[in-house]
Amino acid sequence: MHGTKTARVVHVGAVDAPVTLADVKAIAAEVWKSGVGAGLAPPEGTASRAPTKAAVDILGWEFAFEINELAKQVAAESRVEVAFKKIPREVLDKRAVEAGDVHFFELGALSVEVKQKKREMTVKLKDFVIPLEDVPEEVRKAIQHWSQMVDYWAVDWDYKDDTFHNQWQTYRTRKDPKIELESTHTYPEPGKYMIVVKVIDNLGNDTTKTLEARVK
Image 1 (cartoon, rainbow, N blue to C red):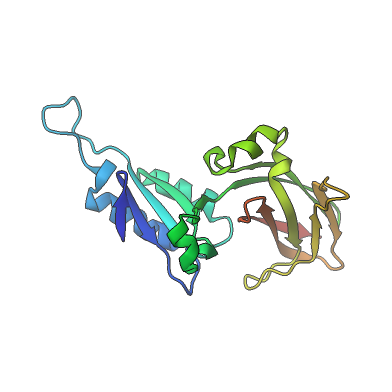
Image 2: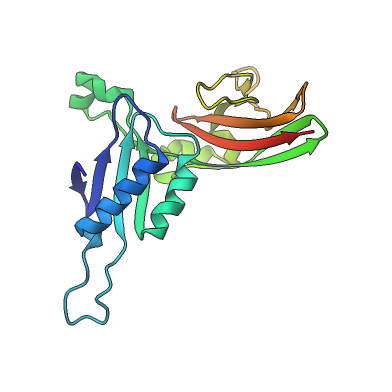
């Protein structure tokens, strides 16, 4: 734990490594044991002495793929509310810090549908949600469909658990503001493949989804 803010514990991830699921498990356990802020039990004499749910904001430079959904499930089992926030590059700019132009945005949640026909695999974006409080009011008023928050997205059809390889992408342009919501790929050989879908929203944050494909 590196501090507290408005009854929430704050943890800052390492500079040289992404925040992983193992990190979240350890952080949740530490927050719950500490009894800091919202994790404190109600005063004696109240109807219940059971501790209330604790809360922690985990700030990171990078996050492991799909950590938002997996880690929140783990944290919920530990009765700890978790929010993941990307550390913006502006924190390295002294002028931006002094001007108060540094904003931490919470990671989004991505829903993807997968369809398979023999060796042909199609992924389709079904939903994308980011906290509305992170979206400027003028932008929020103009949004009529969740896809308008997607700046561009890409797919690595054969992720090897190392570096994301951009094997397909779609993005908006001024001439063509619409964005494709599905992509299809045909595998040349049978086998088990990991697919990673990466979405970059209009705030510059990335959200990923990991899928498994078994091709016969």
